[in-house]
Amino acid sequence: MSEKNNDSFEHDLFVTEFPKQNFGIVDYLQGRVHFALLDQMKLMHSSGMSKIEIKETIISTVTEIVENFEPQKESKSS
Image (cartoon, one colour):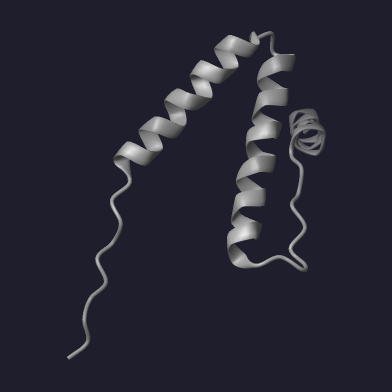
């Protein structure tokens, strides 16, 4: 049970919520990505990674996500 409390503490420490109000969908999604990257970098830094290691890891992950993205084709209604 103490593990769960520790997870909750880490969640509060490293996860920044992006406000939902007064933002269009594009701005909201970009803001969530921005905050998520900052939170991830803060966690990586606290675990001892250098700025260069953080950059390489994140760029590698984002590159993989983009390269594997296959948009769904919209079906045309008859």
